[in-house]
Amino acid sequence: MSDRSHILARVLELIEPFNKKGVDVSEATRFAQDLEWDSLTVLDFVANTEDEFDVIITMNMQAEIETVGQLVDALEKLKA
Amino acid sequence: MTDLFSKFDPLIEQRAALLETGITDPFNLVMDKVESPTVAICNGRRTILLGTYNYMGMTFDPDVIAAGKKALDEFGSGTTGSRVLNGTYGGHKAVEQALQDFYGMDHAMVFSTGYQANLGVISTVAGKEDYIILDIDSHASIYDGCALGNAQIVPFRHNDIEALEKRLKRIPKDAGKLVVLEGVYSMLGDIAPLKEMVAVSKANGAMVLVDEAHSMGFIGEHGRGVAEAQGVIDDVDFIIGTFSKSVGTVGGFCVSNHPKFEILRLVCRPYVFTASLPPSVVATAATSIRKLMNSADKRAHLWENSKRLHAGLRQLGFTLGTDEPQSAIIAVIMPDLEKGAAMWEALLHEGLYVNLARPPATPAGMTLLRCSLCALHSEEQVGEILGMFAAAGRATGCIS
Image 1 (tube, rainbow over the protein chains, first blue to last red):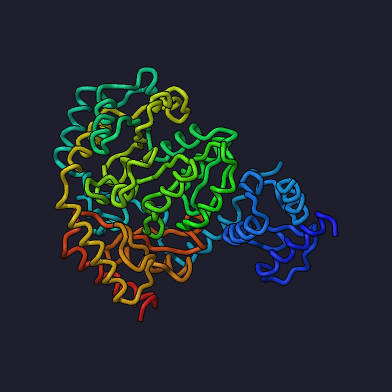
Image 2 (cartoon, one colour):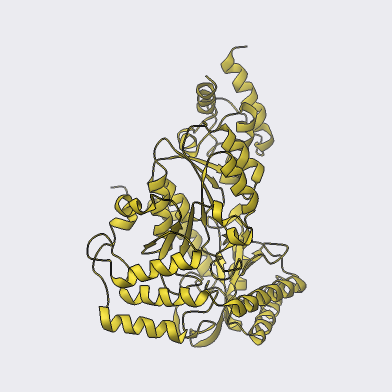
């Protein structure tokens, strides 16, 4: 498994407990529109993701992240 | 042409639906006459004020009013200028001295509102490469201060010491860090564990700013706030406060012991590019602040009021924002906006004004009836307030 697919797999696992609507999640899935997450859900998810990857995802970065794929890209960069 | 107002349609519709039910608009109340810090006439009805943040009841203090009138006579109605040009009068220096004396700090800088104090200090102190670590439930003025600047913004879960520490440890060691906290969080009236949070921040090389807007005058031995009450005020780099609550007028400030603090007067845009406070306002503020230094009896009575209202509301069966009264704010949690608005209106009909607070201002999408007590609420008034809550609560089905 490449680093990227490994990160994606872990991100999908982290999304699952917050995927209350049972949305079929892919790299194109959008957090706000498709998963319908509110700001508190985002905070919890970001905190779990930060802990899992031992990184900080600032609000400045979050503003640029709309989809699951974009989050994986950002994590790849943060871990590099 | 795209109507730029289309984006407000959902809110316009929500408001229309709420008002269609025939309810009084909770965000459009007019006070026709104000009799005292605790009583006003609203829609011709005598109303007890329980949602004004007028914690120490200074708005009608005879000394405060006399100082304002004298300044109005001697210095005119306004300064018509910025603090750094023609807008600094003797009164502005006097109120800054009063703040230095009140807090026992070396520097004080007065802004035109509390909102601008947060906006100015946060946006100026934290630059592009710096990090601001803030509680997720921070006030809008703190978020707007972050947005006005260009620092990296890192939020952490409300009052979670471990979450704060984890984030501090992940930020590059040599990066500049500003931790932003509030003494009292105004929505639920809960206080921050400042003792632990300030220690964790300092251990990780961060500067600390604490907004004490809702604690000044009555929390801590000298009324300096939650940081004083928890014994960490000396480790706090910046305290932000306001004149529009306990002080009883309008304006904002920052006090600090930082040796280079005064440079902010030249580089802080929300300080430089706005008109300074009118002479009458700074005169009333200075007089009020000096009186607040010696208000132990009023403080004690305010705490009595807070405890009694908290216990009484709980006994009636309301769900409150905190298990114990932690400040002069008691938040009553409503099941939803419709019930909250109905209860708010029922209270107004009983002759009681409280704040209706709703998302996005509130945490976790809650609708709150926020009560803020005043040191001048009498024992009888607190009894009346509880009676009104009982009647309105039963009429709206909020309690049985």
